[in-house]
Amino acid sequence: MEIDLASLGMEKGRQYETVITTINSENVKNAAPMGVICLDKNMILNRIFKGSHTLDNILLQKEFIVNITHDPEIFTKSTLGNLPPEYFNEDNSLKCAEAYFKCESIKFIEAVKQSDPIKKKDEAIVIKSKVNEIIINKPTKAMNRGFGYVIESLSNLTRFDMVGEEQKEYYLNRFREANRVVKKVGYKQDIQAMKEIKKELIKKGYEP
Ligand SMILES: Cc1cc2nc3c(=O)[nH]c(=O)nc-3n(C[C@H](O)[C@H](O)[C@H](O)COP(=O)(O)O)c2cc1C
Image 1 (cartoon, rainbow, N blue to C red):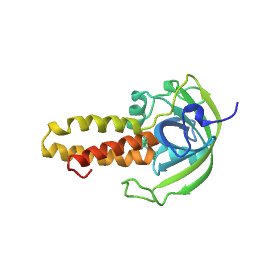
Image 2 (image 1 turned 120 degrees about the vertical axis):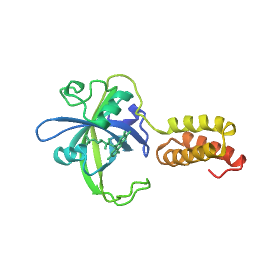
Image 3 (image 1 turned 90 degrees about the horizontal axis):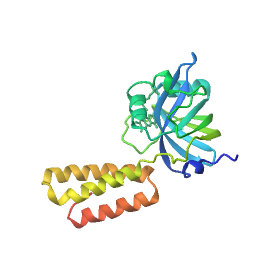
Image 4 (image 1 turned 135 degrees about the vertical axis):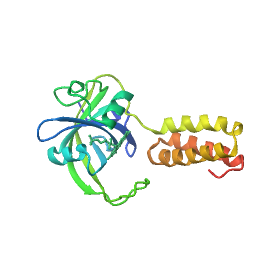
């Protein structure tokens, strides 16, 4: 079967939130949430901060697995600590994964420039990897953060006229951050929706 990340709803240039699983030199399995940028049908990019097990393991093994899941427990547990061994399959994919793909790293670049507020700009490595196999357990789409921000911004907009100035400022700041993220990772429809919300806030006399 042809390798095509579009089979997981992944579009070229877009960023998705996934859980990456790796193994260390002692075969200990590790899982951590990581953003994945789709570069092409079979090519992805990661930017991973130094000091994470994931980066150490990828530098060592030059291979890893990208798991597609929408399970909040998995994201939380693997952010706050590691997942216990029973969460993993023999091939190091996650048992809960709706789909997963196996990657082989082909290029490592020291990150020097980025658009997010992280201060230590040279503390990450950008990794370009080739996708060698896609396994789909059930039809799914990789998770993109854009739509959640659109919904949150719309919800805040509907409350905007009901709150005091301090809360309005809070909503405006939330909108600014949401807009920054959506412009970076969202689909064009999400970006358009944020433009409409921005127009409404401007009409109300504010500068979002
Ligand atoms: C949704 C989400 C996406 C993340 N994306 C990245 C990323 O792209 N690069 C990165 O270095 N850390 C990212 N993180 C943070 C790591 O998951 C976190 O530092 C984790 O503790 C690293 O675990 P590890 O040491 O087991 O690799 C992300 C966290 C979340 C919740």
